[in-house]
Length: 335
Image (tube, rainbow, N blue to C red; front, side):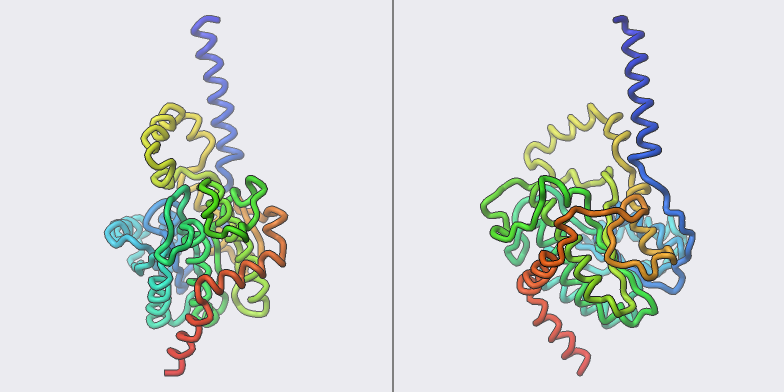
């Protein structure tokens, strides 16, 4: 086979991958042009990646956006970009470390003190293939991706009930259905297992179970709760992957960059479902659903199990000391 044939075959393969990406993997654009004027939005992990692009788009639509992040320097730099690109200066920073229950309680308290209402909470922040434990001694994926958002959400519910119509959006992942994933009840901190991808998938399953149970508990309120898969995105998540083998991974990705780019989404594409769930008026009464590519999908069977969702809720209450935190909130309100 001559080199011309090889060029032709490779070109055909790349063309197929490009078309597949454009019309399948990259997903759809958010079809809604609804404005967000007068609405306040809190987005965790919004100084980079999908969260940052979501913040830019919602700010463009007139929202008051609060960037809830742990790295002040990076968030201040992101704030400048978001204001410049959106043309909206009504964007603020709130410091939040989801690996610390104390930081979450303090952040929620500051938000309750300075906001009259909260219209949208986007639990976007997350870690993948990280190592170690949280400040409170919990497995880092479960702590940041699930427990942190569980506590933050519950501490902001009263603030959200003051909005005419409020939305909670939890960014999960298709990984929740990988490896026949179930909640690791007997080893919640993964002390008997060191496979980090499994721990990540475990936390993403928890996101959906939490969302579904939350939707049931908020059924007769003005608040909806939905989860989503943003797609396989080209984000900074690689900074956590493979530890000392990160350099090797980066070299491999560089070698397969054309294919990688065809099979993954850019930040704009990855943020579309979050944007859609935050702004589209047709979703005012839609709750307890799972979305991908701006469409309702069916999540895994275990993620729809009500007994597992209720059991996870009770476990999360204990691990985050939620009832004690809520007592503090009630005491604040009585003072």
